[in-house]
Image (tube, rainbow, N blue to C red; front, side, top):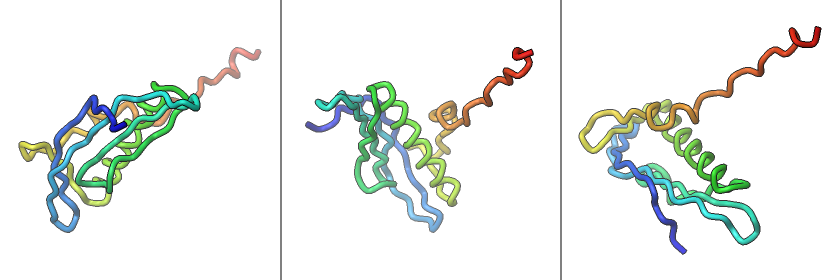
Length: 116
């Protein structure tokens, strides 16, 4: 069964060598599988070669991992000299779209003070 796309953002990918490719960033509805896992499909059309299926233990985890995967791919593309533009030609605010999912987890609280 084809994925049901629940969120998408049109984009233009400008590669470091100058090529421009129109595409989209899309996330599908996460689904439970018969074996008890869950999947969520990500498509960054214009940048990757086809949709990617991301697995998780729950539909929420699969969705979050799919968003994180998309964000990492896009940030890596920019790190290597690419640009991600909206249809209006302005830079897409990737941090606004994926920011919290890309931040490192906060350090664990220092519990040593409570041990005394």
